[in-house]
Length: 358
Image 1 (cartoon, rainbow, N blue to C red):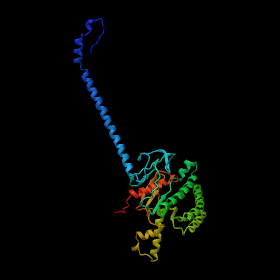
Image 2: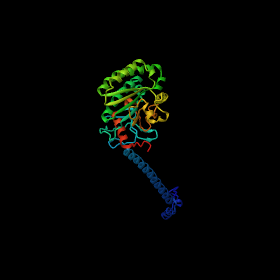
Image 3: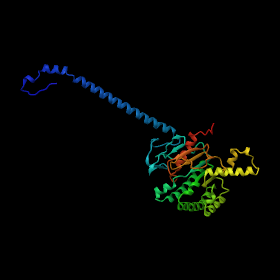
């Protein structure tokens, strides 16, 4: 480089030729080229990395789009969570929670949330399940979050049950079995249990009109009925008697029910038959046990739907659900919509193949 300390000091001023020679011999252009090449290489590498991850993202999006039922056309990118938005009859409304329909095929079942911006599935599924079982979970949480009162959630859940009965009828489902109150629920606070029993009694009385209007036969299944208060027992008896001749849909309400207790009761029934000589021990088989269960006059469930994002059977129809397809919905029971129901049925029809062990 040229260092000019003083213009007056001619001895320190390089001539034009010396300056040109100095530039030709300077190592800086070489290093500048190295730096430029390094910068270009780094930029190219960053571009390749970004392009790779963009390609991966679009591949994932395409896979999610391919896995959705053909009848469900979404207005949004499928496979991404949308916070605080829920689709109700094709319109988006704020709910303050993650509400996108996500399908994950995992050993414990299919996890479902709700798809934002989706159009309602208006077409009936190609394959309709005969029997749907539902664990109506999340009523208390919904009541606290929505109304500041857990009990309000149970009333809202009752309306969702009425809605689902209509959805089942529209699509040709024959049996709907719902988990209303388990034998384990008796361990809750006494005041809460008493209030729930009062709600059940009033609901059973008012639901009788709905059941008759929709031609729905109601069965109340219990494995520990001695704990039920008299008001509930009376309301249940009246409900069952009034709807015994209805034929459009069978509604099984599991009340004070536990699947293990049901199996124990079946064993006791068969043991009594063995003691009286009506049944030989060698004749005991799966069919005999199934016949001793409370659901003996219904086919086994084709689909289980559990709401609130929990992944448990919670002692519900353990014997009957040996080959049931399971759907876990990331919404509380009162939030379930007709679109959610139709999406589950379309997924069952188009993407599930029940092999029964074969």
